[in-house]
Image (cartoon, helix red, strand yellow):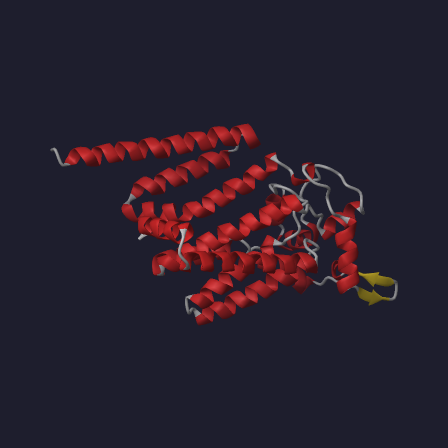
Length: 311
């Protein structure tokens, strides 16, 4: 009986901490972005997996890195980046035209403008399918790594988080309008502009389901085109698949990466410059994580401590 007392005490503290985290998250979310049923679903999933079994507890502990990313992304709605710095609309458009402009009979146009005029059914299908890979592929790959190689899983998860944080910081330093915004509103700034499916609308029309319409209706901020995190995610997946020695998967992920990059431009969601910035953002985040984990200091100690909780 005496030996069971510490365990009971530990269990009580665990319940108290997880309950407190859930309550604070819900109250903070309601205050910042308003109540949504998604918040209750997230709390239910976290607590359910945390208490279901030892393996699900380790799983949700590892995936908490992705949960924290999602919460920060959601909270960005409460702090629009265009309220902090001017939005860059014309200069990005003109830089794109200068560097990657395509000469036509009517003058020089951006790749987005050219592809908007010359879109085709196969391109509409493929762009939609590739864009649907944006979040599911990283999460599925992370789940696979969790069960096959947890040290690599943790490196991947932390790199994913760091890359997003770099991207979010740039969003606030350099608010930028996407190509579709110029097509819809020219160079006029309109605060609170809602999300837009742009070229992905054609995919919705082909499948007869508002897939992307529902997704972009939940967007945190349309003035967050630079860098393209759509373009960054497949780079992280590709790097760690190569790092893990998954040759066939790496070929697949390379194809998905190229498909997402092309689709971002084809659908007028990003300029080529945005895509390049996203790739650079991913490489920077990966380098920081790899350097931090392998070197001495607080980062490697944090990594080892976190890893001990999920192994």
